[in-house]
Image (cartoon, rainbow, N blue to C red; front, side, top):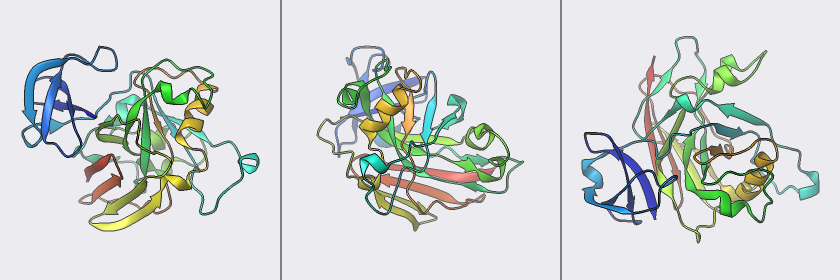
Length: 255
């Protein structure tokens, strides 16, 4: 099942659709905080505007340096860097990434994103799947020229720096430890990897982050980017595709 958040020309609506279907079944309320119950409304995917599938109530947690070209033994792994992206930087599919006036070095980074469904504190790796609603795609846009000499917040949290979408895939059978992840800049491939090359897998990351800070329903963990991220300029178009989830597309403009 895929959970989408969309606009039909009025207020944002939540809905569910099956893989390969264009028929969205409307839902009553936010499925993070309400029982999944059909509203009786049916929508066609091509007739609505997809929005970010989740607006984090609290935070987006980013993970750095989580891909490796070669296997790394568990006892040789170093702890991954953690950073926060403001929830105000979240945008949805087809919304523009706006390069800040003060930056000339913004890169895109296509990543698998975890959507948390339950309060999680000091969770074990074994219990981590129970804390996860599903998965979506994140673009960890970064103004690299604002990342030196201080905290990462400015470079990671400018408005529009975190596209999410196109929906949340909820599928217990999805093997998130082995999904192809590719990105394209103006139609040319940039990133081409697999989540199998993660140093810390998604369940280990949920456990690890929950031991550093409490995770709340609707929080998002962006699990790190494989090599290939590139600088973007006004007029560019970025597409990120993850097997079993979908494709997230955003144009680039200058703020």
